[in-house]
Length: 66
Image 1 (cartoon, rainbow, N blue to C red):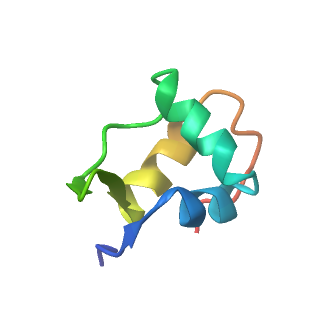
Image 2: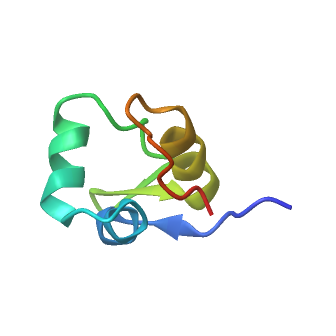
């Protein structure tokens, strides 16, 4: 089953247990995948995109991928 819910910085931050500004910084420095959708200038990612990114990112050390 695929999860096509769209996540903003806030949802991504909650998922990886950081502040939304940290996620913005990741994007600014090219550490976050390209957004799946940009609406009114705001980026959004599918939940599955972020879960895949979390599972593959260096230093993952067992962070949740649910």
